[in-house]
Image (cartoon, rainbow, N blue to C red; front, side, top):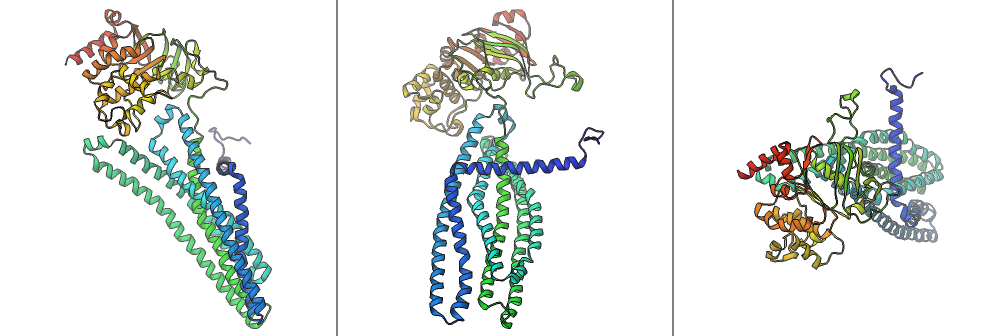
Length: 619
């Protein structure tokens, strides 16, 4: 019999089996991941379990001792036996207190450090992921993984693990004691087990999806909140506060709705456990009470101990049921966290990648093709053949940039300019072809050794919260205040910085909000200058700078570019004219290249673009 049907799909039963196996594999992976978090602290974990075992044993003694006190002390009229039993009772209580204190301290000590390790692991992983990952995922969702999901894991690790083992040991110990004291009464108590088992399985099935949905909804709420706060100036400028309030209210309502599903499940399940506990207690009192009155084997002390133990018997069941809600929330959070940790960078450093030596700055593109979606389908599938422009961001790029030359990339929006410089910075690897620096294939060298000799100034100079000096010094580890001031002077940023009351110690605010767009860009130039890169990329870096500011930094920019290989994406005529070579891109392909004068004389695509820019500048 074929393993596939006529449509090439696995039969329904095989697909169902695969889903079950895959689900079990995911659960096993999550549990392995949870134990991996606790692995570095196995010594304290073992000590925690020892103290937990002692605490559980000590907590099981009092009901039995109370029954012995009734039979051997009170009813037998033996004060000496009563005194001994009371002393043992108090000793068990003190032992339980001490062991519980140690166990609580240890489980929280281990839990907090394990979660601290997890936060660091997530943060390091996020630093490794490629730029493309961040274009596909919202920042607020990633923040939710570090906050909401780790908080859910906190409850699972610090409360859930201890509760799981303590309640399980208590349940097993209580059942053993009940059987030891009176088999018939114990079996009557155990009659509620089938009902509990059916209810627990139904609760688990119904709640699994609900708790996963709560993790997804809180991530959406966090993401929308982060995005709205980041764009609050735009919201206020267009008076769109009511629109955002409505959308946030919708997301908040969806989050409340999925949480209410879990509330309804809890409200139905946990009181049912309480009801079964009451029914079992009533049955024991009726059956055991009649045996005590008839003098038929069951003593008053045994009945008293049984009633006390029933509480110890159903409390763990209740705790384990409540733990399942924590378990579901924690496992859903762990699933999200490990999905994030399973993300692989688009650009991976090869094993044995070597350090890139100090470079002169020659850039070489050899038959470079690039698509953000990977290799487009061949012509037989979707009609996009290897030479078809469809699906390719860059096509057939052959380009050599000699050391020290400044190359300007021009072209209409979507022509491939930014994509080309992303390959130089190795934010992406070519889909086909090679990108080389001084003859070294970028896929063969370490990313750190490449980036340490590379400077990038994007269109919007991103500044971190802190001071101007700290943002400039970010470009080079160990930079001194003198280095910072020299870099600022080199690009003409010192003029506005020295006018500020705090000078280089002036706070820039979140994302540089205390500075104008031009000032932020000047600080970004200074940050690139202090890094002293051999290869410099300016991605429309002067587009946010006004004409007056541009004239002030033009001299500093020339000094910054002097002796360095530079690729400049620019729409400013002054920047284009000053380039050693101009490369014109159209639909991902190079259509022209040469000097400003050569391209104007050719009367091609560049000449047309230049006339449009000149007309706009004149207007």
